[in-house]
Image 1 (cartoon, rainbow, N blue to C red):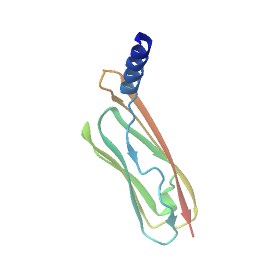
Image 2: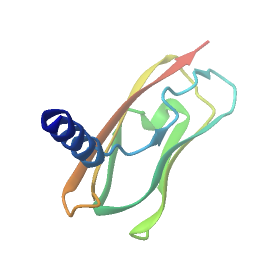
Image 3: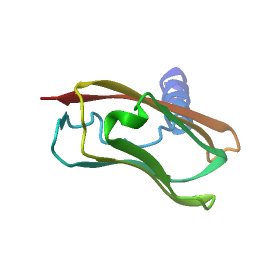
Image 4: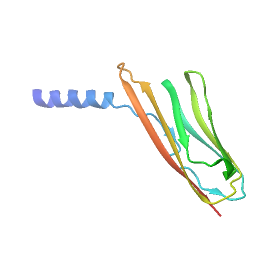
Length: 119
């Protein structure tokens, strides 16, 4: 009986220590050449250490722009992608950051997206 109780206690502790940052959507909708595209990537409200890192391969002449909204330490962190795509292709987007967990440790998160532009 003691072993079962110990196993239950350890599993509860491990589950409490593994936190995941919610980032939506899971997949970006496709964009269509010549049609207005407007989508958001939203990261749950957390305090980021050293801010949010994001990078993309979206070219300046693609017709699309990417921007970050949320400059105060504890705010909604939103990436906005909008514009009228001028060419087909696939663009890669990476979001990365670090926040604190409830126990004073760090939670590192990384999310990668592919934005596909079709005809």
